[in-house]
Image (tube, rainbow, N blue to C red; front, top):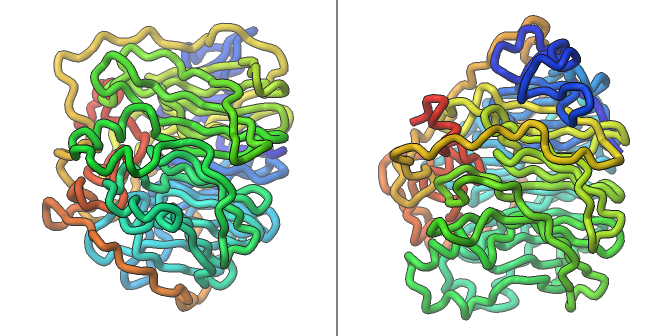
Amino acid sequence: MRRRALLRAAGLGVGLGSTSALVSGSLGRAGAREGEFGPLGSLTVPGTKEGVVTPDGRYVFLAVSDGFAVVDLADPAEPELVFENRSPLADRENGPLGEVYDVKHDPATDLLAVVGPANPVLGDAFNGLVTYDVSDPTAPSRVAVHETPFFNHNCDVEDGVVYLGGNDGARNALVAVDGETGERLGSWSIVSVDDRWREVRSGNWVLHDLSVTDGVAYLAHWDAGTWMVDVSDPAAPDLVAKVRGRGPEAFLDMASDVARRENLQPPGNDHFAARGPGDVLGISVESWSADGSAGGPGSVHLYDVSEPTEATPMAEIAAPSTDDATYGGTWTTSHNFEFDGDRLFTSWYGGGVKLHDVSDPAAPVELAHWRDESRAWFWTAQAATAEFFVATSLGNGVTDAQGTSEDAGIYTFPVVTEGTGTPTSTPTPASSPTATPRPASSPTATPTANQTPTATRTPTATATPEATPTAVPEPASTSTPEATPTEPPSPTATGGRTGADPETTAGEGPGFGPGAGLLGLGLGLGLRRYLRGGGD
């Protein structure tokens, strides 16, 4: 369904492994030896988070924390960087746009949606959406700008309409925006179904992520479960069904410390939902063990939604093993995934990437699994062509204030049709450290500086110089102002990018709220393998 990648690894120097070494099988755990499943190629792109591949598999668009980039996948063994914009909206008074963790591509209109910041910010930093014409992926040109009163962790786009997670603490709504004009079209919130959600701690019902397929939006509302909404008329979204999740009554009398624990462990924690083949809906659960005994890591669940109001579980794809399933341990919990026909591609942070045959969704068959937590922590996995797929890695290096790691980037893997057995690159778990620092997403984490640092990119022998974004006049924002959150973020320290009060922050929980600018939802670089790399 998709394809392509770039940059010869001879000059990478930061650890993604050269293609020539890969072929000879000398990369050890980072590469595949003959007869083993492993990467075809790789490319370092600092700050990489989300990746989305074009339908022909030729290019992958990357969210790179301080902007976006485009990688050519013509030769999957040698992906090539062909465009970077490391400071979108730099010409705007409250720009540039920072903490870009998500981008989405619309094949129907050739629009690329770029959103941020991924977590709550203080001050007057720009929050919102920028769309680009990527009909020529090597020369994106800006189309529209839409400013929001809320941060933007994730988005999706279909038929020229961009859908945002409007986590303002009051409605946490799905918001539809015209990608061509920047005009706000409409919104929908679970508050319209049950107003009692307003009384619940926002972190338990954030709209963490969403996907839109054939006019239906699939909304992952963390502990509030997954909801299906008809967006065939973006100006008037309408509820189809609630697939799973608890109601507000479960949280109304819950003590705040208990609610925070619920934010980490099952039941709940619906992280991402997307439609699969036929009547299949996939839901990834990002959860941990709160006390070290049970609760994590979260899995990918498959549901039959042929009758949306009576969705039934079909199968569960278990997370890879970990020696410590707590939030402060080694993360192998489910993150993002993609269906492509009867194949399912999944990412599991330090647990690596998996490929499943879901031709019988009630009995998924694992075809391949690769992990090397000492080198790669995966954010997403997407199909490129029938021959290979792409996975984005957060890297394993020290991060800056935006969660940018210099050894982040992409890997390409072959699509196999028969199982390859036990993962060949699973490192032996390291012994537990004598003291594990508290993850930076915890309520006591120190806020980071409210500024967008300049990413230091590792020079490469054949790297394309950073392209200057095409000069396009800044369009005036035509967005309709949204309602101001009833409980605006309350900083714990002046000038912090995050550091919001966990009781009043609009977006809160793992990746939302305190310290989220450092680690971001699911970054996990404060875990033991990151600490071994010198993180603080």
